Amino acid sequence: MRHIRRSSPFARLSLALAAAVALAACTDASSDNGGMPTGAGEGLYPSISMSSSRGIATVDLGLRQVPGGLRFASYQGEIAYDPQVLSFQSAGLPEGVAGAANEATPGRVRFSGAALDGTLGAPMLQLRFAVKGKVVRESFTVTLEEVTRDGDFEDLTGQVKAGALVYQAR
Image 1 (cartoon, helix red, strand yellow):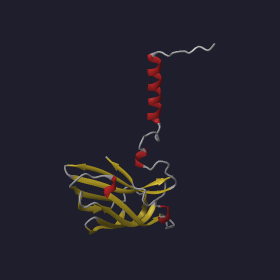
Image 2 (cartoon, helix red, strand yellow):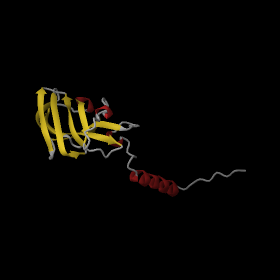
Image 3 (cartoon, one colour):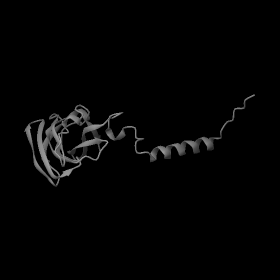
Image 4 (cartoon, helix red, strand yellow):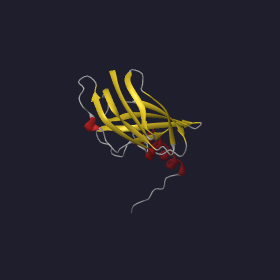
């Protein structure tokens, strides 16, 4: 005859707490995985990180890497945004990157950058917008037309996962 052993409420609570602590210690245990697509394979993922305060949104554009560690020599592309909810204020490149970023038309910012000492890709561009409505992931699209690796200038554009925008609101 088999005996079923019932655990005390204290034992169940202790096990649940131990599991929660173990999960919290894992870097890949978050439910949204830092905004990365579930099951993200090797490649370069355009990434937008946005924070807003007092009607102004700061948007950082970067490239998340799987597995990581690449340094970029240059990049060029376009970020499209919803002009119904955002009004362009300014754009800038990070320190150590030469290039330009300009609003080509309302809703589109063109950018290009070259980093003499290479850059890891975050951020590649920082934008400021006046917020006129609710900003969501679908408020942005990113097209990278060229990405080259530092050192040998290998063309990495084919590794960019178009349509897999990583979005995080901070």
